Image (cartoon, rainbow, N blue to C red):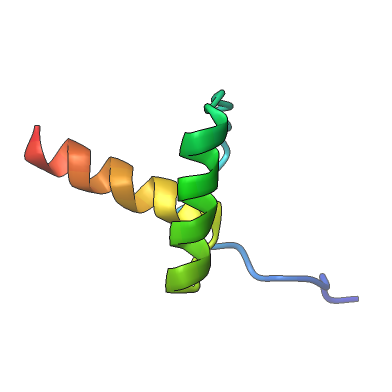
Length: 55
């Protein structure tokens, strides 16, 4: 029987980090994500890519 489920992606994301945010920073992050139709993860990944590209 064939394997069921979602196909594997070329680039898997196996690493997890956790961060603490102030109430203000968290609220701003949530607002930005909602206004742009993005998830919190997408916003953080975009910010990291931009920051690391400039380094």
